[in-house]
Image (cartoon, rainbow, N blue to C red):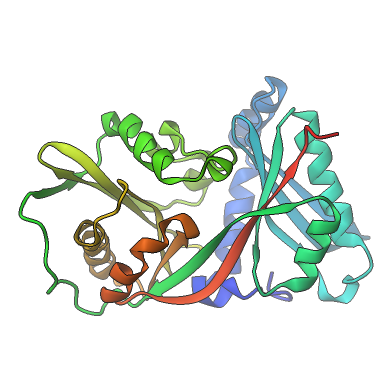
Length: 299
């Protein structure tokens, strides 16, 4: 990671030492026992592949698992061996794992500017299903000063809110996206194994209008990165700009209390209507990712 920083790393403020600590915690016997039992029960959580030459690590790829879909993350190949087919070796390993555990698709995110990687993924059968803007803001910039709806009430998220929020998020997504990156209640209700290993701090809020939930936002802070990540933002369709500002304003105030250097929000293209409201509270686009998917059931 130090030798091969990607464009996201400076924005995130990635700390390789903290990431190393997370990976070491994932290797401790209680965690390894959980991972092993989950895999044995065909409910795997995480697989990590490394590409090595002797004692030197030259590539890595991580695969996480949802109920139907597996997701590739952290794919990196050392610059000294690029354009020699080693990225495809890692991709093939991830594909075999997805097929072994009977997942319908493999999903990954790639920088829209990374043309060589996109060409490789397309060659392997991946197709783009959405674009995602990464928007950034300095949370120490004063918040507020915008109009809110007097009918709205902001409160902390409760576990019982999760089914309604999944319904809201699903309704906003195109069917082709919803089938592959489906929101799940359990992701809202508690921290995943990887987040517990990362020792993150998180907070989340819902927005109600006349007793009905109309929005949700969650913000996560981790010692592995300097930036707070808004993950995710849900709003009813059509989204109300003032509702977006209320939710994001609460999260930004929370970030400012923790003196987080900046905040990052991933805005998928099906929520692009929210971009003007986010720009009004200080967010600007930094770069774009595209989500690509490989259909594992097609052959």
